[in-house]
Image 1 (cartoon, rainbow, N blue to C red):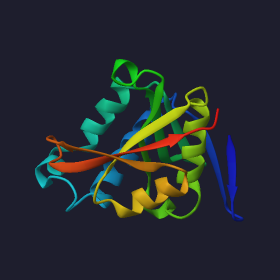
Image 2 (cartoon, rainbow, N blue to C red):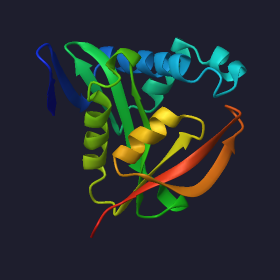
Image 3 (cartoon, one colour):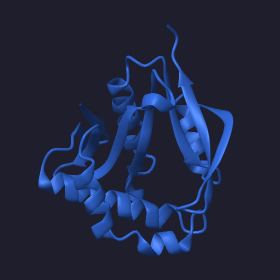
Length: 170
């Protein structure tokens, strides 16, 4: 999937496949957490979230992952999948991150659309978002997701998350 934005930016959305894409995904993950989450999640967790750890995660879970590339540079990614036994028949957007300089460019929307296309056979898709992350919540609402009222506190990050769902007409 290719997305044209303005005169100079052409974004390609594709499966994460190469070593460079794995490293790029890791950088986006690390950068996004360190830019967007100070004050929202445990500082101790952020201190321990190194670029090396993000690369290890990217290598450990390379499937169901699409990257957004601006030329050869990975600028965002979306992870998606099945909720399994926890919620049979429900798909999930597990992660969606974009480098801050790409905020407002349509890259996140293109990644969301690509992730949802991968989950097209699911009548319901959910995600979890930090309760205090108003920017992300507004974005997900624009994409059709609605809060369910469910909430959990993740002990690893010492922060509350809310569940949002997108129900598709059958």
